[in-house]
Amino acid sequence: MKELLKELCMINGVSGDESAVRESIIEKIKDYCDYRVDNLGNLICFCKGRKTSGKKVMIAAHMDEVGFIVTYIRSDGTLSFGEVGWIDPSVVIGRQVSVGKNHISGIVGSTAVHNLSKEQRESAPEMDSLYIDIGADSAEEAEKYVSLGDCVYFDSEFIEMGSRIKSKAIDDRAGCAVMIRLIQEKPEYDTYFVFNVQEEIGLRGSRVSAFSVEPDFAIVLEATTASDIDGVNGGERVCSLGKGPVVGFMDRSTVYDREMYRLAFDTASELNIPCQTKTRIAGGNDSGAIHLTKCGVRTLAVSVPCRYLHSPSCVIEQQDFENTFVLVHELLKRVHEL
Image (cartoon, rainbow, N blue to C red; front, top):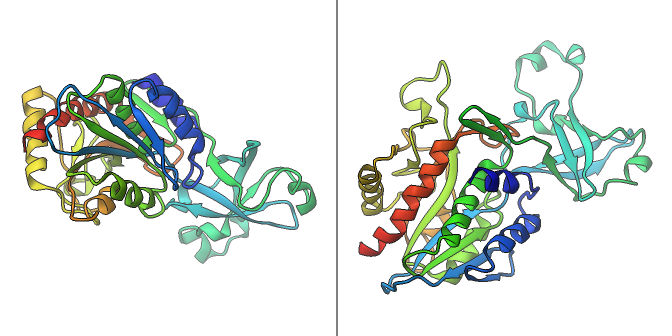
């Protein structure tokens, strides 16, 4: 699981540019299921199980990661850019990035601190005040290497930190990795596995794929924000590393199926693995689009708790990642009993 996650995280694939991620996944699952790619780029897989219950179950994760896109080349050779997905500007300044298919190295720069006014120094930076320096001295030189519309990715290593992992794109390559392993182990019941595009810019891929599959039940795999650091107490911590997969009861886009919610905790208890819920109604994921599809879909989200989400340095606990697979593997059997 760890090596699979590393391989997936190191592939660049911001929203709308997921093809390299999709091709890597296809190579890993093509001998285990039937698959197709829809017009938006979603990878829709069907695994024939040993049993058929008459209920259509879909499990989903998204392939895209947050990043940037080049919007303008300045006269001094630096690049203006926009966000692809929500990113806090404070985690961007000074970071190394990779621009375009030619992997041009760049650094996100900002106005030097000694040139800022007192008010500017005391306020949070704004994304449109930042730029990317690729070492060019003019727009003409920069245009030899970079074009408008080029995607920009965090340039970040995959590092083991004791029992923890740090990388870019853990949101949601962790979910993709779990799904790949589930496919390779063959589900007990017929199951649809959907790798969605463009989640980070408005749940776009899942709107299309869920409409196509028309599931009765959906389990969405994600990574979700853990704020379990010093100085953050009680419910504001949301969830914690080391306390198992996160099963939410509600977020900003979905009120989750109560029976599926209880089933997840009962299953975790019987498997003797930790499981936690979110202690704040925050965030959202592809469930927001999936559960409203056609006549409605009974939906649950199971997430890996992750510190520093939407940054080049997402951090997860390996055991939480492994336990997410264990829990979902069993849930795929039990959801047919509902």
